[in-house]
Image 1: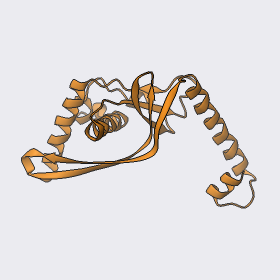
Image 2: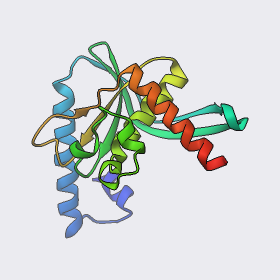
Image 3: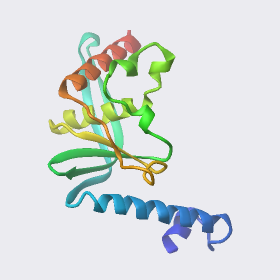
Length: 173
């Protein structure tokens, strides 16, 4: 209760805050239950600040990429970057084709979560030289299914990197 009051900046938990507290407790319990099914796993980091400098060849400049990763862990020999979402994620997290992320067709461009998954995987590869599997914990979908793991091959990550570099070149040109 003390932590909730402190974060919510209230002196007493009442009314809507009682309902909000109850919902938060349900979500935390469900996340912990989901994590228990993964055991053993190793938590690597939480709210991890990651920054890398990326030289964009044709423009002769470096671009500083920065993000805060919700969580990094290791499960069954896989390194994962976990991102928590409050909304639905399955439709927007298809990582099968990075070209969809950069396409010009509006129906195909709505892959914002897929972009984020590729971006996290790229940053961790640049920082640590290792492939990370991106994973989404959607609070809406946790009660009806498992977290969504993005399947990103090294070839698709290289293609994403090419497309992102082309986008940087277009911006700076």
